[in-house]
Image (cartoon, rainbow, N blue to C red; front, side, top):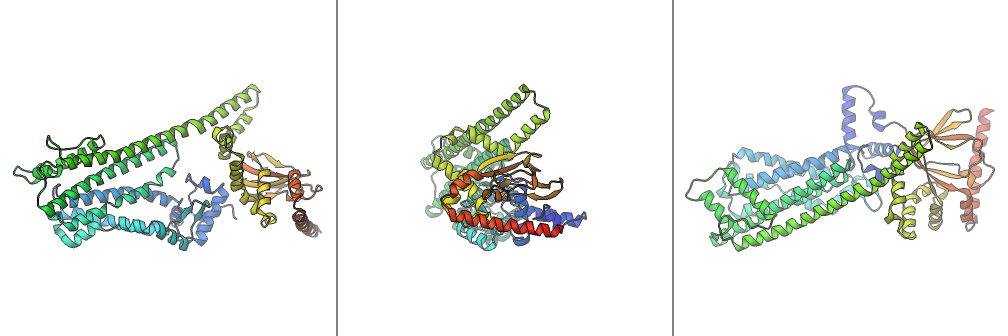
Length: 538
């Protein structure tokens, strides 16, 4: 795998056409800046491999962690909100009449809602069970069709377009909308809230900073809470309209009848903004368990509507409290642990009169994300209190795939792989650290989890690089006569798993056949390499 990004290789150049092409493709490929990539890809090298795989094999697919997908998740929310606002204005008999050209905008917005269905079909998905990103077109389509397609189509029903098909330029007539056809369209528009829930569900994963994450979480609660209350009030108005249609009258004490009397009574109708303010006050008052009524004696169904609205509001109140607890916990525990460790370590370095270069190296260690995970793991009381069986399962799930990727261990029994995983030791090396010295016997197998290491000959010539999943010094597992002929130096901050040969051999006592097969395979491999090197120099 080349160390350059796939776009620099395939679309290199400084012309504006090349720059525009790189910007376009980069919008749909896996993004380097998305915060979620750390969960699925451990290093920049892994990101480059995934981008190259998508570019060459799944170019027509949108990556779920791409810049465009993130932009679309934010852009579709105001489109849905504006669509609902205009549609409710066009179907309400309370508001003033508007020019029919104003509602043409809503028809175009409904086109964006159908475009969202196409974008969702082209977007890959995250398999939470296997922690994999699926980009295969057939699998993506089947997953979308089985999970979201029906509700997405239902919530994208072109209600404004159907109104135009029936009323044409007469769509601005408010009184003409009091019929069963428009009532049915209003009921269908209620399902738009599912699109809001689905679009805003991804906001919680964008955690570039604590303040941004907190702001997005409470913005989502505010949007869903206000829209839910508006829908509840709209349902109450729909019931009132149906009552008038079926019975021909409505109790004068109800809120709907009071507003109708103001809008179409003998007195001149007030401006439209008065009815907007009444609707807004009605929603806000419902958050406080007050029945909104324009007369002294409130209508009993209006009281029940207010009670139901308050119970709905309590759900969002509790949701807000839960989010507050999560964010306070996030601010207090992991970051406090890291700050305390950094402060104590730097203080210790000053007491020992260590040079500033060493203190800077310590700071780089603490900013390495795997170092932060180790510090939190060591000091987190909940993790330390977990039973050994759960800790073992965590270790096996995290590291077994690295062992299985090594060809010598690929077909070994599962129980043996699990035993070997428990023998692995995590080691972190900073930039410039010597991982392995030349002319020295090896103590075990090294597996690179994340980072880039350089291989240098005895003459200090760079011979190659090791990246994620690579391994070295495997010959020492089966022999004590192996001497390293090159040095390995960390070019970036690295996390390495170390399998000590002594403990490995103890485990392999129960599997002598596998051990000798491994020894034979490694002996044949390195013997052929040694002969090839001798022939090259001769």
